[in-house]
Image (tube, rainbow, N blue to C red; front, side, top):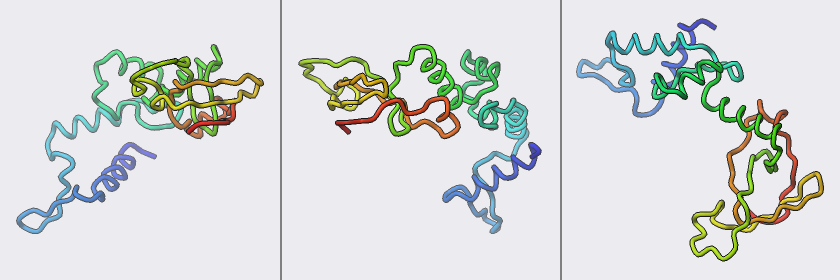
Length: 169
């Protein structure tokens, strides 16, 4: 699909959202999401010229807040969008260290059980006690489990479930 076609589909999708379209005084339907000037066109052209993510196929530069930053340079060099870069890092860590708890498609880590904590808000899941049985047979029981998120389907083969939750949220 050409950049122009992708851009047209993107504009059509965005402009169809409630509150995006407005009617001018002369009754014309006008998309208020984009400025109609040379700077806006240059910005959108720059976005469409960024490389595509090698994992998901989206444009690496869609979030311009990273342009000119070390993170933006790393994403562009790796040819990955932020989301795919995040999950790739977790895959590499899992393959190297293997300390992740992956249960029901969620990536979790144990930051160590904490006894006698007055403010449980500083603990993962508010200090709720959870128990996981790893497929290796080891049992992980902790009140300080942190969730990194639901693993996108394209990363599930690299981050397969390795535990079942026995107790807890």
